[in-house]
Amino acid sequence: MKKAGGIIALIAGIFGVIAAFITLGIGGMGSALEAKDAHVVVNLGWGGVVFSFLTIVLGAVCMNATSRWPGVILIVCAIAGAILGGTLVAIFMALALIGGILALFGKRPIVAVA
Image (cartoon, rainbow, N blue to C red; front, side, top):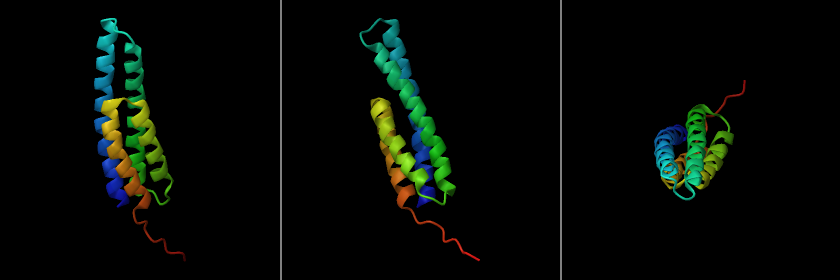
């Protein structure tokens, strides 16, 4: 299950990056048209980019990790990305949250001690 959680997090991170760039584009158009508080949308886009890239990295780490810490960090990253990334990114961070839960509670390989 931890490999499945990592793969789900990778997919969520890739789509999250796309959603973050869409958010940046919308914020940029708002800034160009001098819309009120357009800088907030731009900042949400950058937050989405950061947390989506972190989700991609942590998803890759979760696939081969032997400890539970990458899954915990992935869950925290997904929650922070949903809050600080904007609405479009939050949709995919919910998927990353599911991947983090799978990576956290997935079965670990049994390590033989010689």
